[in-house]
Image 1 (tube, one colour):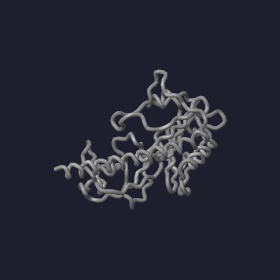
Image 2 (cartoon, rainbow, N blue to C red):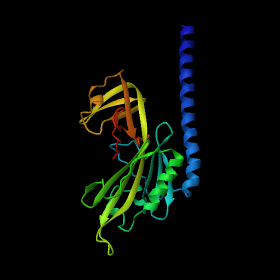
Image 3 (spheres, rainbow, N blue to C red):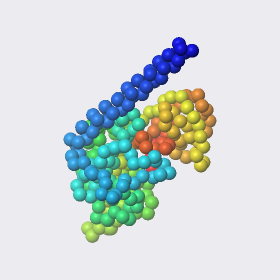
Image 4 (cartoon, rainbow, N blue to C red):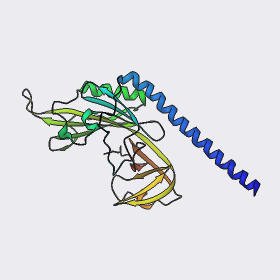
Length: 260
């Protein structure tokens, strides 16, 4: 019994050391990225003053793990980490949307220029490479349109750059597409053993390496048929550490992936 107890203690100690090493790696990655981000983006945004960060309680466990920087007086750059400490997303959005999910709270005068979009892509590429451009769209061409809203996506080898525009009238030009928000979502390959399976609403979800995943729509074969102990190879975009379940596609799929 004494020898058996020593074996168990040894196994637990080994697991503890491995977890400690994993945590140290994650923290090191984040710290190295933050040093670069501080140089790129400058002034940190101070969270507080009675204005908690917004998050969706149905899909997220809490505010994302990240750092926020001011961009001018009305915009912020939000740098959000994945569970492994790598960059999951870089977003340039109105400061108001940190605390509200309603665009009606954002003044119509709040907008971005095309130059700022180029700057964000170049800056994000320093933090984590996007790879070569595959498909670049210019609003309103090739964008999904809903009323005056234009939702566009540029595809890179290692990321998707989503940008939101608003069509509105201008004195000089009857209609123009005004850039209002940019989100860079990094490609994250997922490969491992299915640890668990569950059904949430109409979605069948699988758990791989401690994270839950589901298809963009119900019925994706790999999620419909995967069993505990089987191997899953997926690709997800912009999956952050605070998400209850991330959208993913089968690895062989050519879909660029989206995240709403």
